Length: 137
Image 1 (cartoon, helix red, strand yellow):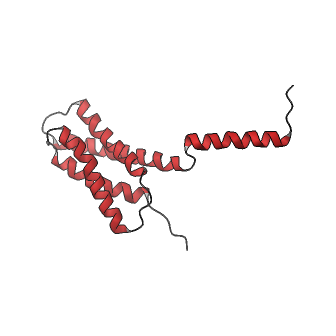
Image 2 (cartoon, rainbow, N blue to C red; image 1 turned 120 degrees about the vertical axis):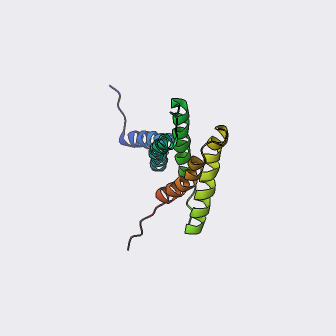
Image 3 (tube, one colour; image 1 turned 45 degrees about the vertical axis):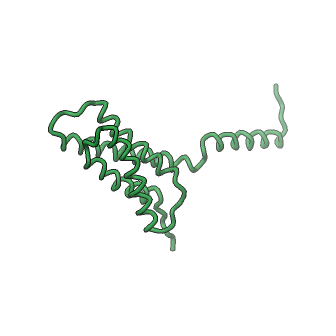
């Protein structure tokens, strides 16, 4: 039987916990998951909107690419450091949302202007949702 004193065991547990925190990112992973889930939800809304706007049936690959663009937008916004002022949040949300949407818009021969513009609105939604802080009295 393997015997271990309490100090050795505690050191081993602390070492294991530090490894797990560095691998998983600790509490910061919550922000990444939240960003990806928000992006996925906005992507579903985008797919529905694009399907309703389009006169012809859109391909599955096109719709997946549209959805994935929104997921990556959510992930990108989750990587941002905390932005203090509302004006900076608006500027960063719009500009980064439009930039990420422009990647998809340009890849589709500039066919879905509404989807591109929605990227700016989604950028605002993402930055305000991911950087919302409750003020406690």
